[in-house]
Amino acid sequence: MTSGDLTQHFNQYFEIVLADTEALRKEAFRVRHQVYCEELGYEPINRDGLERDNYDDISHHCLLLHKETQRYVGCIRVIPSPNPDSATLPFIKLMGTKLNPKLQSLIDIGEVKYSEISRLAITSSFRRRPGEQQHPDAEGTGENNGQSADSERRRLPSMSIGLYLAATAICEREDIGTVIAIMEPRLARLLNRYGLNFEQAGDAIEHRGIRAPFVIYTESVLTSMAPDLKSLLNLVRSQLYPHT
Image (cartoon, rainbow, N blue to C red; front, side, top):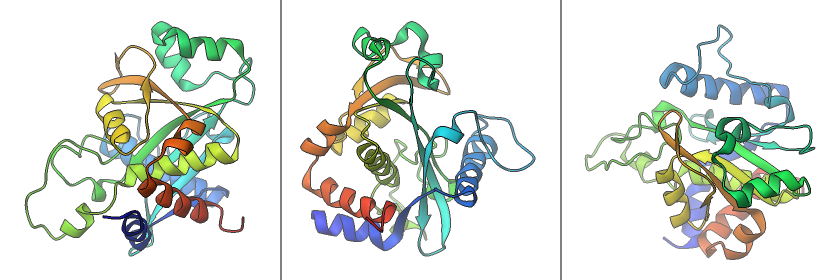
């Protein structure tokens, strides 16, 4: 598949939407509640059907729209650190002393503008292959060799890749150079194969499975990205910011 085919294919099925209104942010919280609370049990069920935390008010939120059904089927957020002296992001609380010295020094210096990517979620209707059901990002380890009714859906470009490219576009626009994510190592390996080169930045821990801190640098991504991803990133930029 050429870069143009990849971009055209993604654009045929999906649109990345910047959740910049209260109504759209609630859609992101609904997706998160469905995945993190109802399907995976990571968080408690809330009566309002929304999954939120104290970081949401300062975060940038994105949604993944499935064009055929006009349903939001995925989300991601970017939590900036507006003032490293006063803002503690979730990865710092979770990892404690498990961060490596390089990343810890960037945080301690307080002169680097960094952010955390979190709450990546894909709804269960798009996590049907073996191995995907217990992974919120829809990137399981199994293979689907059958001819089910949703076989065309299974050939779509990675939804998690599109959402990570949305986060990349936000960090680029906000001039955020250092990005941290707590993720499963197998997801980092997948992203690396696509040219999103996350470097492990600390020890793995048990947190809803085995997870570790990873760091990526926005400038490096933009300069070393493969042509197919550059084309897809340009599409994601145009979807996120259609009037610029």
